Length: 165
Image (cartoon, rainbow, N blue to C red; front, side, top):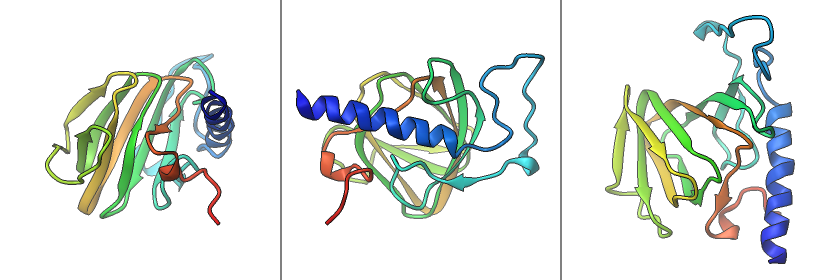
């Protein structure tokens, strides 16, 4: 139980860091009108500490640390892997370019699975254990959900937020 509480606190801190590093065009709520983000104006930042190094993201709407709708874009480079994990909220994914491969279960094989090419859409139910990887071209995809958004790795040693010796 202590380990679960620690991961929950770590997840909350990382969600706050994720939001703080977000793109300047993001808005927590559309107070006076629509949110419009033109593709050339998207400013990418290094991925959040909850993802393995190499990812980039741009927060388009919302705050991942709050219970509000959120939309973000993610870029995963070629041959990138996200170990088995789950989310406490629904995860909606739309692939914009490249291919995102998704496998199910606590043991990653990084083969087979479901290949989501440009234009594909997938919804991951809450707490469904899955893993993801890219091929030689990488991928750009849009994720939307309702926060608070976080990621819990099946094997705590896979969590990039854990201190390494």
